[in-house]
Length: 218
Image 1 (cartoon, rainbow, N blue to C red):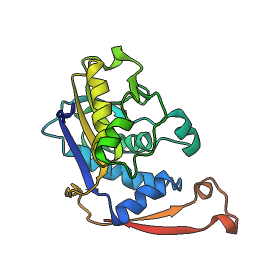
Image 2 (cartoon, helix red, strand yellow; image 1 turned 90 degrees about the vertical axis):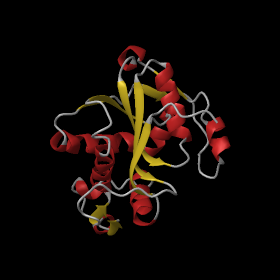
Image 3 (cartoon, helix red, strand yellow; image 1 turned 135 degrees about the vertical axis):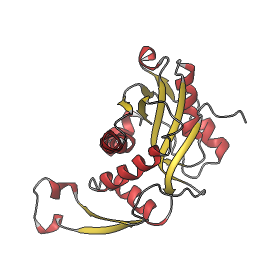
């Protein structure tokens, strides 16, 4: 297998236990409040690039196909990137990180990657992405952002597309990574977050919508 087009990947934790539960709460249950905590984890992962990455980077969330985005209601990669950049502007003011959520497009709906072998994942994503604004990408250093790094098939496909469009380099940052452990570059080893229905945050307080739960992210 050819080497990936990206230079480096960084993650904050392992995709299991409470981290898995928190990511599922955001991704599948639309538990919006968890995004801030997971965004801080993504920021911690990106901070690992302090001595490695250029000061100016274009931050590109891995895109969803329009059908999947309409079904889910949001792109979790973009949500996490927005939260992470908000924190990094304070902790790393010397960086110039520009969010570009439309530079990379998923042009066809792909089969879910869950349950596929690494080879099947690569084939599933072949030709799935394209760059909508080559001029905006050409010569830029790219920080590709996603929620989970599993086999690297998605990161490979996106990075190759960006490099072919003229990007100077690509680095990858995710909240979690499957199988391999990476230490969290944060002061607190444990965070407690209160999750509630998004309707609650908008002022809906009837008893059927007040259910909430606590997830501990290690």
